[in-house]
Length: 481
Image (tube, rainbow, N blue to C red; front, side):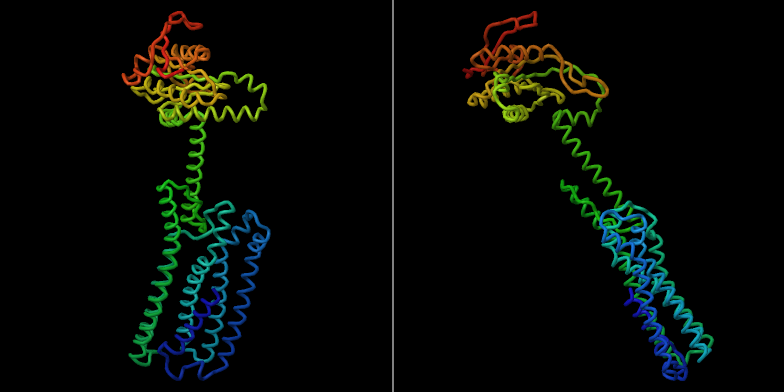
């Protein structure tokens, strides 16, 4: 920022004494060399004041950096307002220097004082805006840390509208005023020596204006386009299925509000995904999806489903003889196999009860081949577990009309199915534990399966299961031992 103001001062001096069409005899620096000494001394003093002021204004920021952690409101404000405060110091120094230089010029050549005053005022305004926008760009990493680690406030920086108007004022209005001032001096005939000198002055002003306007436009465009570009990249990551990190918040205007809002949206979406994932792990993906789409009201609907029970044999003895951690590892491996087979065949594991698992086919998502899927899952489970003596288990399969829905209280409920097929499958599981094949199914589920699956099962005798009044015809896989 000091370099920017120094360049601005050099351009003013060059313009006043080598470009502005003043009479040759009015060259102040040539006829009065001591004016150079005054200018140099003031520039040194102004630079010292600027550095000291910057140190004082940035002291809270340095204290925050050394301490670490989140900044206080004062430290955050100091970090965000540092470019503006420093530019105001520079503007004040320009005003003081302009008054001094104008007074010095007036004491030597009174008729040039107005031109000097107008030139210095226009340069002061231009350097104020340019140094502020440049300083804000340079201190962006500091602002990003202050805004990300502290609480966002939307009053720490000028808004987009103010910045655009500032760009217009510095890049268009100020140069136009300068050109108008040149034209007025020519019309008055007081300062202009020749048309060629006037033309050269206008060309120089136009060239400087074009360069300054380009730089200001680039800075302003960067203030707006850079955060939008970062947001676009983050959105593209979301569309690609990735979870982007938070975008840097380095602006206290509407752009910063947009950055903060996007980060909050991403955090909320990530939290919803984690909750949905956790919810799905507890109740199953299909149940979770149904709850998200249709709500979680208590009650249910009538469905034709197939149900499967599987229960470990002798797990009580294992629990008494083995440490709890070993028992848990054994159950986890057992349930991993059950979940894999059930999901592979389009069912859901509705619940785990001790060493028992209960699977449903046909709810919450309806399917026409629920019986076939349940029977296939029963056979595959038998095949995978028969070579693992520690996983000796009974499997029961049934099918029929049930009520599927949320059961419990408003504060705590679960999705399940209730009906006679559930009871029948549970009783078949108990009976299967005492049969060599370890797998039993009711004739109802066999008859409602497709012909290919039906051919893989043998029908047996009819028995009255415990707690039931009607007899159930048993069936078991053809290759069951």
